[in-house]
Image (cartoon, rainbow, N blue to C red; front, side):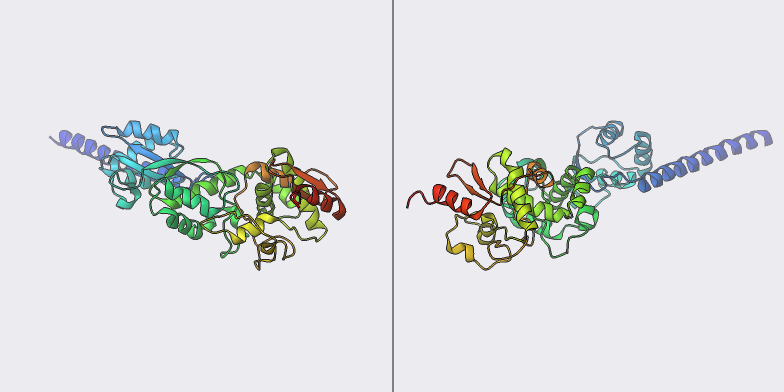
Length: 357
């Protein structure tokens, strides 16, 4: 009888120790996962949990999306939680701990983290942001495609985003706009959370502005903000891709010589309204009182006037080496005539802008 009791006690002890070891192992792995955060921590990832999907299947999906490193760790945490998968579409973020992910997809997290099917906004939608759009235009497109909260919600997300998670915004004053940093591209937007979409665009910018480009920026004695400001002018002026590096060179040369940039798009930016974001200018408009009017101010405007694409950014970082100091549009062709002297520029203006006189 004593032998049977002793054997039973051993079995119970081993079982209890197994539970402790399992729990400790899951905790240890979870802790390690939390401290080994990925470089793209904070990047949003949309994951859909379907009816009758198993924890094994969702673990494989999470691993494929880069949200977890170990499917076994996830399954162990899932079983310990005692919860069940709740079907729905979730916005998860790179760097979330396994317990946080389990809480989200089992309904233990707050309800607002789930994209509810009953929402009037689409769960997600494709959106194309052209190069050279100002932030308000992106906000209007977000609203047009059904984004929750409309343009106001998008603009609010841009204004109030947590900038500390983006190293390229470190030198930007809190009151300065994020104009220029919202990288133009085609995205899959979250229909219910404008903040997630702003994070996606900023993460894209951070990835596309490579370490080599950052090094080149420093070599030129510029900041990223400076580069984007000049690139936004190039984006709004250039119609032919091959002219971008030459237009960039003209602006850089004028800055080097302490000349005013005299860029029409900066005046358009200052005068733009929801009725017409890029209005046609008159001669009087060039005297409009604004810190963005580069006919009236020295140096760069306070910041970018639009969100430039990769080609315009590259044009600023690797401009053509030319003697040109002026350019003027040659009618509606999109081509520009470039000039070295003021006399050459005046002749080009007479030729291409004063043809009706």
